[in-house]
Each structure stands twice: as structure tokens, then as C-alpha cells.
Length: 342
Image 1 (cartoon, rainbow, N blue to C red):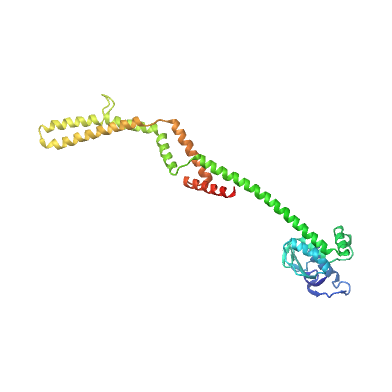
Image 2: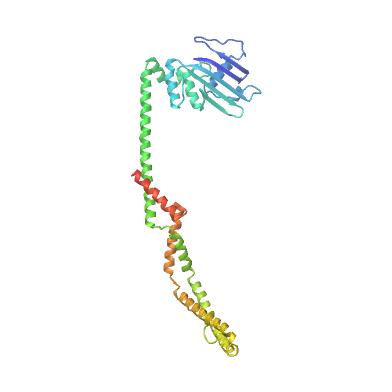
């Protein structure tokens, strides 16, 4: 039964608080006193259409709240809905509230918790019947007929047991579904971890390998340029024929001049010896440059292999880490996880 109702800014009502007693309650008054407005407020509270004309002139928000004491035969259905929503409830009492404003905001609450309008309507159908012109009577709603039969047959305890069994069945089905999904997820995870371990393992990476490959790639990629520069330096030192004398030819000429000068001035001996040393160093340098030039490896095949290896490392770094050490750690973690789930 409706025990209390609090109405704020509804139609011509600014604020009204009513308490009802068990048994027969009568609202009396002359035409226009607001009796039907109270009924409209009750209908709105239980999920009826929140019409804009219900808002009191000058008000920004309308609120209706009701306290209901549930008869024993109505508690099963109401509590089943509340349990379905995970809401707490007392043995006899339920508090329903509804607020709406001119912007269309509509808030429904049951025992202080916000619910959808549909839930409010489901609860409202179990709380009260409004019998009047153009109003729906629960006797005409087909979905309520089973409730009347259960009440008439005093079958609420059996109905509650069946409802509990249905909830248990639904829970079991959900658990089975979860287990199936978990197995599928586990299978997908195993495939993913296996792929990671195999991919990194087949790459056979070594820490420091990338730096070594980059250095080798620098040498191989510039082999021709390096050979040309070494040959040019060698030619400048050694010369390239009678018409293209090198630094050694010039140094030898200078040494001959100093030897001749030494005949007339013995003090020049030290300079002449330094010149001989410079010639020997230049000759050694020229020979080393020739050996370096001739040792340069022009190997396009090896260059392609190095590029392919660096590309593999780059692709693995994009997926598993910023360095070979991080890639190997990622693969190690994957292998450890794989061992725990298989």
C-alpha cells in the first residue's frame, strides 16, 4: 500500500506531503481542488508519462516521492526484480522517487538508487492499481494474469523456489559460457606465445650483433668509395708514371739536393738524415695504402645478407623491444608464461 507521498511543484501543487493509513482512505474536495492531480502524481511516480504540463508554473523541476509498504503476496515479484538489479531491500518498505525538468531530464530512483524508466514501470505495476477513466487496469494486462493465478493458488513459496532454480540455471549457463570463452582465449594466447618464442628463437639473435652488422654494412656499402680514396692517396704519394710524379719522387729530389749541400756544409747532415727518415715513412705509408686498397671486399652478396639481417632485427624490434636485449627478454617472458599455461 501507499504509506506516504511527497509532491513538489506538480501542476498547481507547490508542496504536499500526505500520509495514508491502512484500510480505506478518501480524498474529498470541491471541483478543482486538486484531487485528480494527486492521482496524476501517483501515476507519474510509478512510470506514467512525465508531461511538461505537470510542471508547476515558474518551477524548474518537479519531484514526486512515495513510500510503499509491501503486502506479503507482492514481495516475491518486487524483490525478484530488485535482486535482479543487485539492489538491497527491506522486508516491507520500498521508496520510489521521480524527478523531471523542462529540459527533458528524467531521473527515476528506487531506494535511492537510479534506475531506468522501464524498471520503475515494472516495479510500479506490482505496487498499485489506478482504476479510473482511460487508465489501464492490471486485470486487462495479460502478463499479470499468471501473478493473479499464483496468488489465488497461494503458490508464492513454490514460485520463489522455481525463480531461484531459474536464476541458478542462468548462472550455470553463464559460467559454462565463461569457461568456453576462457578456453578459447587460452588457446589464442598459447598460439600467440608459441609464435613469439619460435620467431625470436629462429632469429638466433646475439647481444651486440646489431652494432657489428651496422659497422660491416658501412664498410660494404662504401667499398668502391673507400677503394677510390685509398688509390688516390697512394697515387699522390707514389706517383703514376714519368709524367705524374708523386710525393716520394719530390722527397727523393729534395734528398739529393741535401746530399749535394752536405758536401759543402757538414751541418746539413742532420737535415739530410731527417729527409731520409721522411722518405722511408712515406714509402711505408704508400705500401700500406696499396695493401688496404687491394684488401677492400667488393661483395654485393654479403651486403644483401647484412641488409636482410638488419631488416629482420628492425622488424623484431618494432614488435618486441627497442634492442636485442629487450627482444630476448620478451621472448623469455613469453616462454615462461607458455610453460605455466600448457
